[in-house]
Length: 357
Image (cartoon, rainbow, N blue to C red):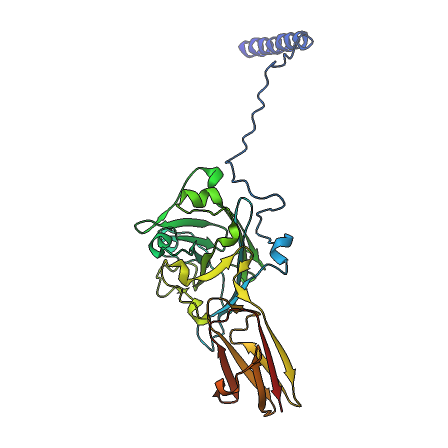
């Protein structure tokens, strides 16, 4: 009897509740907020760069590919006959609001490893370029104190440090900080498909001035030194800097000292990129051969001697060799069948004429 009473009571309760809700359903009024919440979090502010530029790691704007833009092309080898090497290209130019920097790295015979642990980040073990960057000034001490180390890791992370009583990270408001974007080549880092990375960066003049630089009104007078030290990483987990990576200062192979925190000893860049001269080769005679800059560069540096390699084909003799009309036949040095000659302290474009007979 008690069970029947309980069941009857429960059914009556449900019926009353349903009737109540039905009675209220037509009386619900939605009152709109006269001051709706419209705030949108825009994230951190970003430094304003020149119109027509997009910092996305693609380097696809016309200024990067312009014939006037001079690039540094280098090959970083583990040793002379190594199957592991990196092809490196970089350039910079002066915009209206800051300095733009482009970098491309492709490795052969090695993997692109990135694993952000305290030991690997602190020891610079990940695949990266430590780009040393400073003004070329008459006052060498002042220039050293304004020299940056930008560590560009292959996955897009970067740190900016400046030489102030040692290398210390430099921070200011977000709207003054560099803007950096990176794209990998072939696939994601740590996969066999990934062969390299591309970095596109913008350094606002206000950021450089915050660090002590004096930016001239006439940017054509400004020379900066850049040394793109390349880091081979040999493992994913290793943290031993003498085993798991090679911090490779390859600049001396190109006649550039690349001394520690001394920008006048780095590769020199100006308003339109690498400070360099063109060279052309005119061949003559009945034989055949080739002439090239010893590192395969398409140009010669303004700040270093230029050495060329000559390879004669099928035993042809070199019967004429002039540089801007001056004979260099007596300046040839032979190593086996290969000859070399050096143009000391070039000050202009050079025209090479050579006859093989």
